Length: 220
Image (cartoon, rainbow, N blue to C red; front, side):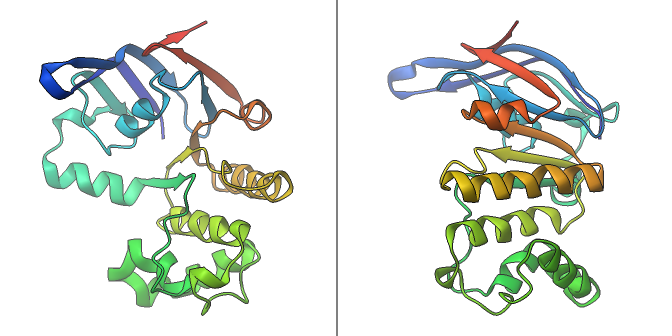
């Protein structure tokens, strides 16, 4: 998926009418299949940019284009369908539902198609080394296993764009490197555009391109 933002802005109104400009003017192009890491200090606007491009929030100003289409022109239903069918999400916390098995957690995003897609779930979990964990509960998994389940959930809808926000931030170094390997290998194999936010310089260097942010804008 090709992505383009033009003069993207996002402001938040806090108590007593205080306005915080999280994004001030962000214009960037990301080509289909690219792996891009967004880096910068806390409060730079990295996660805000990720949430806007991932259609989890709406910009205050500016435009977002997917494959040349202005996302702002979509109605509410088409907007939600684009997010559901074309975008996968992987966060620092795995956010697995504690009362559901591994299999159920992965298939939830495609529940309406669960009968036809079940072989894909089993195949994907096998590729991630989780073939023996299908019926386990999240509490029975290690941190690395839980994050791999979250990755499977992010990939099960065959996304064109994967948004990752500190995906290995809660893992020890050895486990984190394994999850990183899986993340980049799967994106390359599936030709998924990856947009990654991280404070980890080693993880950032694995991306094909770096975007540096400070105070809500991109910097050289």
